[in-house]
Amino acid sequence: MGSKFKDAITILAATALAASLGVASAQAQDKKIVAYLAPSLDISYWQWVGYGVKEKAQALGMDYVEFTSENSPAKQMDNARTAVTKGVDAIVIGPVSSTSTPPLLAYLKSQNIPVAFAGIGPQPGQTDYTSSVTANNLETGKAQGSFVCKLAKERGGNQVGMLSLPQDRENAQKYLKGAEEAFKSDGCDLVQMLETRGLTVNEAVTQANDMLTAHPDIKAIYGMYDEAGTGAAKAVETRGLKGKVGIAVADGSPTTIGLLKANAIQGIFFQEAVGQGIDGTQQVFNALSGAEVTKDLALVMPLVTADKVDSSEAKATIARVFPPSN
Image (tube, helix red, strand yellow):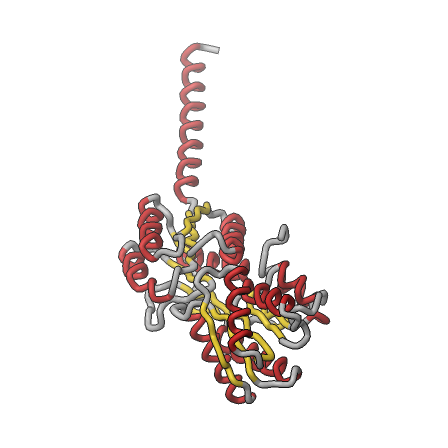
C-alpha cells in the first residue's frame, strides 16, 4: 500500500472522527436544561416536587439543575437570574409566595424562558407563564371543609379550628374560601385560624395546643398542610383528646399515612407533589418543542380514609405524592 494511499485513508478517518465529534457536540448543545426553583428544600413536599421534575427531565432527555430560594423573594429572583445566566432553557418553580411572582414572570418573559408553577400558582391576574400545575384547591377546600364539619358533628359539636398555610399564597386563599363555603352550608363555625410561618411539626403542635386551650369546644381540626396534621395529632393525643377531636389534613406523607392507619387522623386529601413536578416539566418541554401546552392544570386531591388506604386506587395516587424510597 503506497504512502499516498495511506495518507488518504488517514485523512478520511480523521475527517470522519471530526464529523462524529461535531455531531456529538451539537447533540450535547441541543440537550435542554430545566431548572427547578424550590421555595425551600427543608420541606419534604418541595423535595418531592423536585424528584418529579428530575425524573421527568431524565425521561425527556433533559438535564436538571435545582436551586433553593430559602423562602426569600430576593433569593428567588437571584436564582432565576443565575439559572438564565447558566443557560437553562426552562424553569419549574414552587414560588416563595404568589405575591412574589410578578417581577419574576416579567424577567423570564424578557428572556423568553418558559415557566411552569408547581404546588403554588402565580398571583391572580398574572398571565405570562406557560403552565400552573396545582391542586384543585377550591374544590378540595370545600370537600375537606365538609369532611371536617362532619367529624365535628360526629363528636358532638360544630366548632372547628384550622392550621393554615400562609395566606399570601393563592392556593391557601382558595383552600380557605372553599372551606368557609362548606362550613357555612354544613352548619359549622370556624372559631380560629392560625397561619404557619415555618411549616414545622413543632410549630403546628404549639398552634394546635393554643387553639384547643382558647377554644375547648373545638371538635375537629382542618390541617391545610401535612405537618399541620402531624402536629395536631400530637397535641390531641397529649391532651387526652384522641377520638374526641377529629383531624383531616391535606398533602399526605409516610408519617400522616401512619397516623391515618392508627386513627389519629381520620382523612388525608392527597396532593400529588411528585406528579406536579412531572406534569410541570412536561409542560415546559412541550413549550420548547412547539407542542400543545395546558395553561392551568388543577389536579384532583382524593380523600383517603383508613379503610381505603391499602386499596389499589390509593396506592396509585400515593405513587404520585412522594418518591418510592419514602
